[in-house]
Image 1 (tube, rainbow, N blue to C red):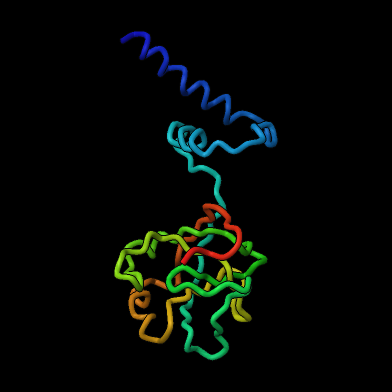
Image 2: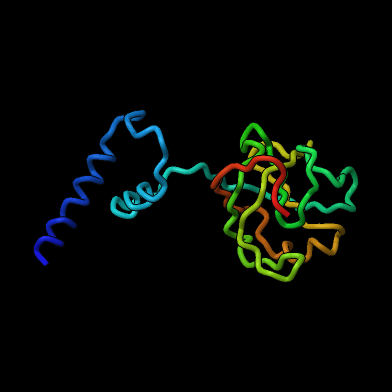
Amino acid sequence: MRRRLAALATIPAIALSIAALPTGATAAASDPVGDMIVSIMTGSLPTVAGWNLKATLYHAGAKGVGALDSLGCKVVAMRTVAVDRNLIPKRSVLFIKETVGLKMPDGTSHDGYWYASDVGGGIKGQRIDLYTGANARSMGQARGLNLASLTAVKVGEFKGCPPN
């Protein structure tokens, strides 16, 4: 038991030494599990790109909306998000916590993941546009969101087209 306690006592020292490293002195490869462990021990959040955004909704029947996004891929209901590429890079996978649990077109619950594969003329700065589906009725589920304040976190990147 004493050995276990002694081993656990070294964890904060390791965390403090990692936190004390100068910028650029960390390992070249990312270590998300290690980052999470350190963040739990130090009480800080892991460093991820995140934004507080205003959102609007769009659907396929709207004026100027085509069947393809700016990457040339098919837009995907409740997955495609239009972004200002000067703020959020295209091909970013975003987690928008407020959308968790929304009803998906297939009846399942939304997991909160969206794909930044579209842009729009009105999408400037801290704004996003969530694609809801084929017509205005598809916007019903998302209308309950507080579109004035959504929290988006970049959790990765995708290649090719977003998954359906």
